Length: 538
Image 1 (cartoon, one colour):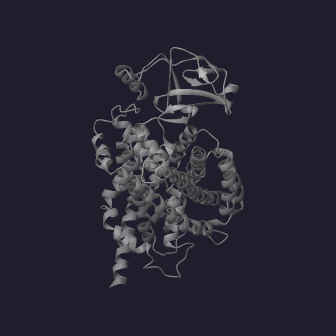
Image 2 (cartoon, one colour):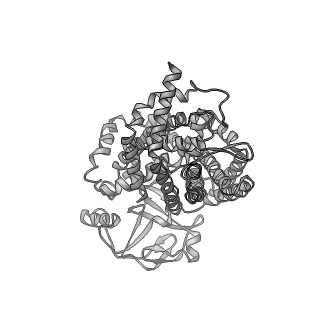
Image 3 (cartoon, helix red, strand yellow):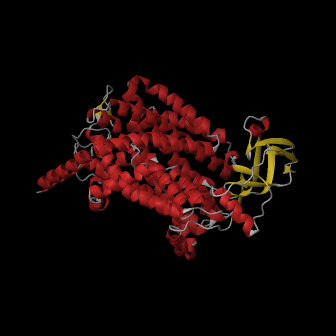
């Protein structure tokens, strides 16, 4: 529902302001370059630093793992809806940043603090809505910037180098703590150096895959549009996707990736040195274009052109993605495959297995069952305990492992199935000019992109805490944030993303209400900005 409202909101502002993402695009680049900057302007960061800080909060797992998850769930057309979400989201980003910058405040420690909560309080006189947004921002700092970021990094490091999840989490948690203590100025300095560098590395790696698979580029590109009205049919290990599901996944992942309408980026942009709120809104307009139209599109085309999105690979199963059916279904039999596909898409119910899975030396001995993992038929399944084959029983209830059982905590299922999130992107990058060396692009890109996202969101949560309780309580937030960062490194991925979706919705809704109420003021501010600009220029 929130995704639907956000999408309509974006479209409304695009039409109401007469497609500013097209009309103001060139001017936004000029503002970003510093052409109109003056040293006496109040603020903590430059336009470029504000943009890179905001981008560090958006360019992360959404661009790498999120795109892969959207295609895994919705098929190629999910990428189309991600791009459309970004195109209209450029306007929303400009609007929310303009308002937040206009009503920013200076805190007791001399730093600038801004964000939607300030225009809600200072302009709308709706302190309750501002408090609601600030609380949601704190939760979303964990759901967007903390938990999914380190979880994706840890997964990528384990899949590529075999580094234990908790080791990755511990090392990066210490580094995160050292950076966030330095506040926005240290965060901005880190972001302005790391984000452009890693963006270039990632895009070059992506282009190497596209060049290698040049013969698949046109079919891959056309597949984005060919499934828009019919959904994606069963192909390879992929069991299909409906039009509605593709749209939902694409919009949802698009919102998560570029965060337009969520109200996060305005917190970073509020610190920019300028007396013209609209000019900072212009800079923010570029964010969804860079984040989604460029980076997410490259990721999506790499996955589609390489063909890995419907191929099975050996992997360690996420227990939340594992389903055991009470019945034998053969993937090589078209009718039975279609039946399971209908179950996966929610069109048909199939009996789920309850009872004991009997395992001997890693092999499941039960007959009359079918294992599904990551919305695909699981093959060559092994059950292990540590590094040794497991022997014993695993209790199942309605197709799922009973989490209360001791075995659920210590055993692991491995086998061949579809991949999603960062592992899927990793396999895609191996199908390029760099060969197996390409797999290292994803873990290192995630390491830098996702880490800087966590840094930026630590600042967003910091500002929300400052708004609610003052600067003296920020250190307590930092402690909990870093602790949560470590714990999430070895937590189930599917659960992390489910929590993330909830927190995004909680934060987005009050912000959308606020900017809708102030739509006339935004238009007036833009017109006055151009009047002043042309007067100075003349």
